[in-house]
Image: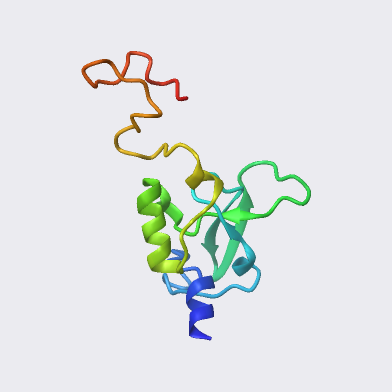
Length: 127
């Protein structure tokens, strides 16, 4: 029971009621994870959790949130480490299978380089 609670609970809701306590919300625990481009966001409000669509959601599309909240703005390797430590899984979402846009240094195979190893002048065009 504690494992189910730990893996599905929301924590650190700065809503003035729960004071950041970890809380399990029945409907909130049904959302699937997506790292960088979830279709919903959430925040605490008067002891409740509120979910909002951040873009149009197609009928039948799975509802997603980033389980890491604001701590999700990091490299794929770091996000996977954080999710493994906090939720017990290695993320396989679409964002983790795409070019790692959050890397501190762009991947050499994804970004063109000059012969001396510097980024090419037009380094904004990813392959």
